[in-house]
Structures are given as structure tokens and as C-alpha cells.
Image 1 (tube, rainbow, N blue to C red):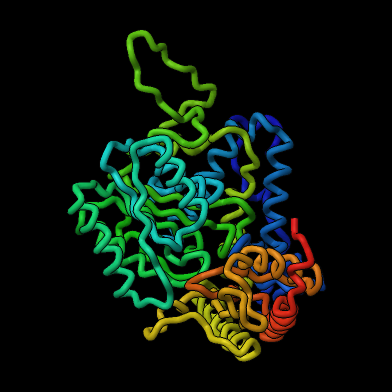
Image 2 (cartoon, rainbow, N blue to C red; image 1 turned 135 degrees about the vertical axis):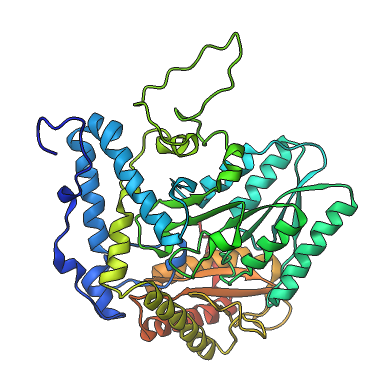
Length: 461
């Protein structure tokens, strides 16, 4: 920004990044070596948990941080709002949604709390969720059940299940609540669940909620950048997706979609900040807002400034989209490669471990970039040779996770589902078959050590 320019402009020319970081690059090791920041010895098989971003996006991130430090007041009051609008427009265009229905938040958990804590619950109100919902979602509902009249209805899901089976269980839960004279206020479900990492028929569940008069909240934490999303066609009432997982945006950044018909339900952010407009009463004077006046919608302004934080992640979205287009060849090529990589990784790991991939007869669970493979560990009463007592499962999972990193410099998520232990691998553009082979062989060796009881002699803190 040149001296004397007022008000300060969001000059994107100041945020240019060198072209060499945008050269088309082959997937696999060439992509990793040219563009990503992993330690040379580390084997990153767990993209789904935290994501990562390339050096091109890091350059943009650092430039935005430098811009904010050059003139902090000018940045937060004038430059940042304009740059944020451009980021929201980029996400809206990517998703095919109206820009004024999209805001940015740090992560999916923030959006979950925003929706749940803005709804007013009365006696008889229930929220439906699957047993495979993300842990923080279930805990948020549990907390609200402790502090409000809200009741939680947990729909048991045991994979492999068909899409029909999941939809039928959801329908049955709604009908059961109605027969018990309860009011289903909201149903929460995933696009792709976390553990197990499987594709969920979220479009069908959204349509079911609409038929039954139930508000739908789609937790698409693993959606954007991993699978194609027709949000406008599906018409959920609320939708959130992390951009820092599969879109290569720095942590933390998520797109939160609320169509205009529901924006009146979202009265405040969490924490409440300057965008909140209190209900006026005769004895309640108006609260001063120190931010510049704006003609934007009240919903957009609500989320524009939510306390002071590093907003550079929000301003790195265009760089991530540019990288995906110019370096990777576009969304379809990325998604196709990552799903294929995950499917091949699952087959390879199942062969090494002597087990199987978690999938149903329709093969719908694996239509994503994550795969889940059963570990060759017997779990029961602990009476047979090498059999692990059910009471030791948590200890074994902690031990496996610790030693994957400590002994093998790799990591993949370990979880317990349907009375078995599983590992979840993520397909990505920077991985090759030999990376998954290395991870599966490490797990095979660790499972042998578990069967020999090594985990019993070590306390993982």
C-alpha cells in the first residue's frame, strides 16, 4: 500500500508469489519434494486429521501476516474486510453458492457450536445424530443436554451398512421421536465421517429431513476438496466444511453456509463480538461498535470480526485454489487421484495385514479419499493366545499411535468400531504406494508386539 492512499486498499499486487511454485508437477514423490513441507523421513498417512498446505500457499499466508503487521489498524479496519470478501467470494464460486450465504470460521466445531447454541430448546426437543458423529459434536450436544431441556437421540451405526440401511435408521428415529410426542429440532450428519472415514449418504438424509420438517445440519468437515458437493441442489439448512483439511488452506479455516431463510436463527457468534445486535429495551442503551460502518448484511457482519485472531488463513484461500488448478490440474483430477490412491492403499494394507477393507456391497463407503482396514488383533475376554481384553482397547490404541510415531516416524488414525480395531489411511497427491506399504508393515510389526503383551509394560501419558 503506497503512502497517502486513503482509505487503504486491498492491493493484491502486493501479495504476488513467485511463479516457480506454480509449475505443473506429477503426483507422488515429485509433488511432495517440490511443494510440501514434510520432514524428509516422515511418512504422512493421516491427511484427514489436520491437513497440510504447499509452499505456494505458505508464501501467501506469510505475506498476509506481513501486511497485517505493517499497519495493524489500517489492516483490520479497512484492508482485511475487503480481502475477506474476496475470499468468501472465491469459496462461494467454488461451491456454487450465493456469496452472502457464506462466512468463514476457524473450524467445523465452531460452526457446530454456533448452530446448536443459537437454537432455543424447550421441553420435548431432541437432536438426532449418528453414533459415528465426530466426538466434539456429541460432546456439544451432551453439554446442552446438561444445561437446557434438549434431549439427544443417538442413532446406532455399525458398518458395513448400506445407504438404504442408514437412511431407514434415520427415518425410524424421526418417527419414533414423533410417536413419543417429541419434536426433532435438528439432525446432524456427516458428508464423510471421521472414524471410520466413510462416505455418508448426506444428500438423501438432507432430503429426508426436509420431508419430515426437521432442520438439517451437514457436518462436511471432510467434504470440500475431497468429494463433489451439490449444496445448493441438496438444500441443507446449515453446512460447514473445513478448508484446512482437503483444500490445502492453512489451519484453521472453514466455510460455514447458512441460506438466507435461516440466517435469522443465528443471532450471535461464539464468542459474541461486535457484530451482535442486542434486542433493544427502554432501559438498555445501544452498545457502541468501534468498527467502521458497513452496508453488508447483518449475517456477514456478524462473522467479519470475531475477537482478535490471525486471519491470514482466511486470506490464503485463493492461493490454495490457484495451486490446485495450476499445479495439480484441477479439482476433478485431484479428487479422482486421491480416491484411487485411498482405494489402492486399502487393498495393499489389507493384503499385508491379512484382513479386509471396511466397505458395503454397494462399495459406497469407499467413494472418498479415505480407507479403513481392520487390524489383525483379536479382541475379546483375553483368554485366547494373543487375544486382547476389551477393557484394554483404549490402552492398545494409545500404544499403537505412540509407537507409530516414535518407532516408525509415521502415523495413521487407529480407532475402534463394530468390535474391531481399524486403521484409517488418507489418499493424497503427495503419497505413493510404497508409503502405504511402509505404514502397513509398521502396523503389522506393532500388532505382533501387542499380541506379545508389550503394551502392558508401558504407560503412555
